Amino acid sequence: MDRRTIIVGLGLAPFVSSSTYAQEAWPTRTITMVVPFPPGGQGDLAARPIAEALREKLGQSVIVENKGGGGGKTGNAAVARAEPDGHTLLMTLSSLAVLPEADRLFARPPAYEVSDFAPIARILADPTLLAVPADAPWKTLRDFVEDAKANPGKIAYGSSGPYGTLHVAMEMFATEAGIKLLHVPFTGAGPALNAMLQGSTKALASAPGVLKPQADAGAIRVLANWGAQRVPSFPDVPTFKELGYPNVEFYIWAGLFAPKNTPPAVVARLRTEVRAAMDNPQIKQIFANAGSPPAWLDAPDFQSFVTEDSARLIRAVQKIGKVE
Image (cartoon, rainbow, N blue to C red; front, side):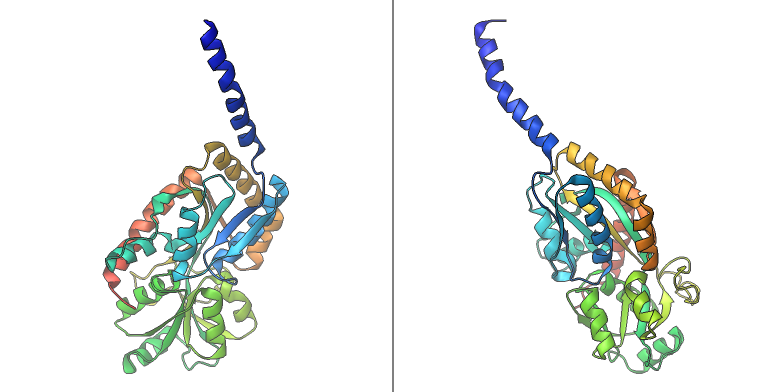
């Protein structure tokens, strides 16, 4: 080896060493876990126990930042643009793939693409439930449909925003039932639920974990379930399939992502720590008590799940078409 090669090699050594140490030292500061919805929804329910578990394992603060807007678009796009260094994460919902498709439907440039993210793990995956106020006149889904047919566009329902999870679920049902409902968008499931409880809207599609406290308190009535099977926390609530709507099926899953190009070692560490968190009996109990049992999938299986579910939801959006 000549003198020049030695000098070059020695010159590179500090940079290689620094890079290696930097990678091993991750995280070096507070981690922000963005939930692209206000507090009180499925994303928030999934994020907070996982954020606390990561804080304990990684030795750095993990803060949950609720960044609502656009049915999830604002927060999703912010993480897509974030530095891929492992200090910004995203806990988002199944609308991740729907929102870019909605932009294309209206000939708008998508704010982000699903390919802008690296999947870490699926946390929850619940069928959506149709809820109405406890004092509403509808005792069954049939009552609801008959009233909606008699009064088209008069029954107002809340959502997390145009083409968000709650909106797509309701429009999927309305399309199959041949009814017209009045869509009232909010910034997330929490505000949409509050609006229904306060009487400004009359229906809501949301996750079991969001609805269970209100159902247990007697404040709401749940009429139907978008899943293929009944939900253990709502065993008396029939599925849309049972009620004669075989094509009405929708799930609100919550999953953790990092920006694409996040270092593989960081992604691997996150996968390991999230798996450990999901095996933790205390965290399992938190989700079970909320009526939303864990539905963990590691990154490879989660990627396949997202691909399959996204294709189904994109077809649903295309069928629904342009709605406001």
